[in-house]
Length: 486
Image (cartoon, rainbow, N blue to C red; front, side, top):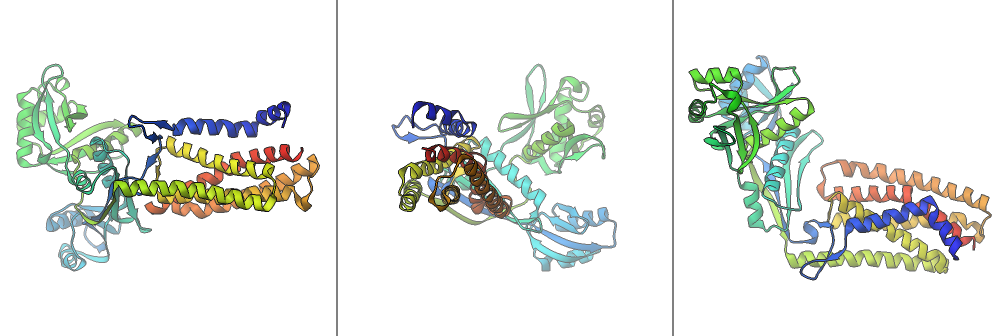
């Protein structure tokens, strides 16, 4: 191919887009030599490909379907007192009980409270499972642990029984300590300037409510929480001692988690007045209006719990990968990818016996993998064995579609005229788009459901199909046209 032909090919927008994406992907992957003299990249590896541990936690709670003739508020309050735990209304016919009881244990208690159990399932509601997930993620991030994944395993009925925590680069003992360790939560009162004085620790908080609007129906959000008797006394004494009750505007209430400020605001005038007269156990921290207020309220709920989960959990399963085994898996995955590309190249050469066709096919196939790895690096997606399987699947489906384009163009073994070429290419791309849509639809359930081991495979397969349809197939069509015209 001479200079003008090569320039015309590279300047075509389809080929230029492919080249630009490849270069950007290499920058994102950033292959380099680290300080130890080893080859390193920006790619993050999951447990399958490096040392790490995983824990599967089982929620010690249950969701019970019920019926009752009593007023809902009275019924739930009565149950909460009899069961000595939080009881939340999930929907008009289901309650979440945040303490483990068997169905046989619950039935007489429900009957005594004026209700009847209709269904029973161990686990928590989807909303509580998400709260637990956020608390664990916040705790892990606070401790500076990298390459961690927390996945809730929620069923079709929106009840989650398990949550899985994966900690790459962490041994089992440390993983159990991270998951079980409670953060240090403290409430202080501002005195003068930026100085603050201790009032109470997080162990004085007996319960934390879900984020709510105050007053009900308004756009202002916040989180309610309850103090113990001693905690309420310490809070009142501190507020009076440091002047927060008489000059609340200049004496903020400051909340810290592991010595980091997570909330700072003055007492309301109403609360300041009440504290002058008596201990107040029920408090409400306002976080503001709109979406920002909602987000801050959700975060504050997590901080108020100080890393403590809203329900007890037990370890239902655990496992890990040693450093040597992780390195072996990583090398095997690399060899599998290289072997897949080599096998594809051999089969294609056996079919066409023309290096001018085989080489572009293999390079286009390899470029898809490079672009996919670049995207994975940018979005901090972990590479594990299911993800590697997705990459290899992309190699297979990709070469199938390239063969389809080539065979359609070389119908009857003849190089078509330019007009006929474009018609055949358009027909081949139409078939590929339909096939790609089918693959995406088939993979969507796996990508959206809480099947953590298969989610990576589905996401990579979908991304590979989209990159092929939008970028590499059109570029290959232009490249093979230039080659065949010679």
